[in-house]
Amino acid sequence: MANQTTITANKKLVEEFIRRVFNEHNGKLPRIISAVMCRGTEEPWERSGIRRHDQLFGNLFAALPDLHATTLSVVADEDTVWCRFVVEGTNEGSLFGFPATGKTVRWDEIDTYRLTNGKIAEEWSSPDMTNILYQVGAYTPPWIS
Image (cartoon, rainbow, N blue to C red; front, side, top):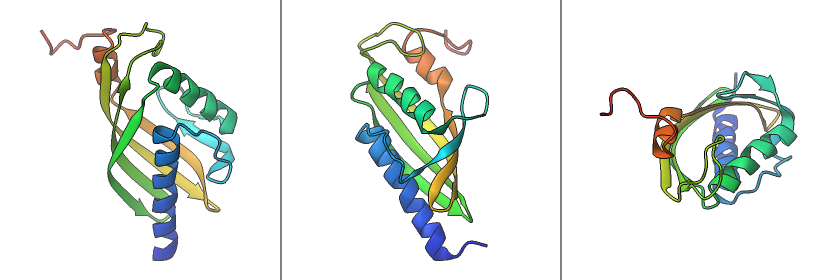
């Protein structure tokens, strides 16, 4: 059972991860991310490690060079941290295979992190993909006429 000091440290580590990755565009975080980090996203859950993580965010920064996340809430219990934030950036490059639009893209995201030995060992990312695809003109949800 994690004590309050560990829970607080885990929250701070995740907040640092979001600040450094999303806002400073620094994916080189071996002090924060486990070398065998597991990641669950729109792709199948996999052991992706730092290299795959850097590749994913590199592609995202190429598409949205001014990407920025605003943290709305952080909740932690034991070895798990949940973070809710808003992400936005200008679509200046190919995003998920769709051409740049020059438009600002903004979405809500909720991510879950599991920490082991003071590092992020697992991340489950839940971006609002419908909203992202709609904003870049790749998809129109049926409820929008």
